[in-house]
Image (cartoon, rainbow, N blue to C red; front, side):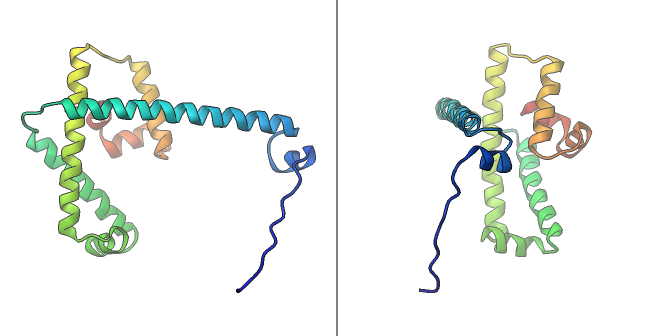
Length: 173
């Protein structure tokens, strides 16, 4: 035995809550925590349902052929991203893949190919559904979507997001 630790917890009092959280009382803290947990559970359920439906749709979809130019573009985009990560770490592409992904360049390129195929299949199926159902979005909805994407990926502006990702890719997502 290297050490014995005694774990002690602070009593949950209004003073403790006020000093450590943005709530005035224990009851307000508990209410907010309960609401956050309920929202997380609801979000998890919705995401699980969406994932199951998409999985079933993809399993039943029949795609005759994938556009090779798009497939290659997606594959090369993934590879370019990892080459960029390697450069940020001051490493070669091969060393980065080996150290962080435990993959050779050849194995990673196979992964990038499979990932590109999966992404493109899903994109084509969802686009076919959107076309068949005549689903469209307004410019306000698109702007809101882009704002959410920019925030979730840490972009300071929509212009930077569009510049980095490309408007055509964003519109398809």
